[in-house]
Length: 78
Image 1 (tube, one colour):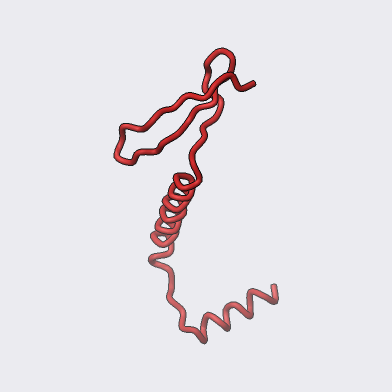
Image 2: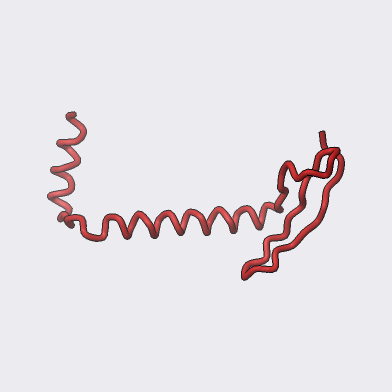
């Protein structure tokens, strides 16, 4: 049950405008962010994940195009 929507803003480094949906006892149940903010948050999360993945494979062997194609063909057979 949605009783009302409250407005709030973050006092941290990045401002994330948001609204809270509360229940009849004024307990926060959900957060609403505008689509522009959501897209920005999604991009930051994806960039962070990509950066972590790149760090994880930093020491992996680098293959030439020929070696990579050969390896890929072997994977497809399995």
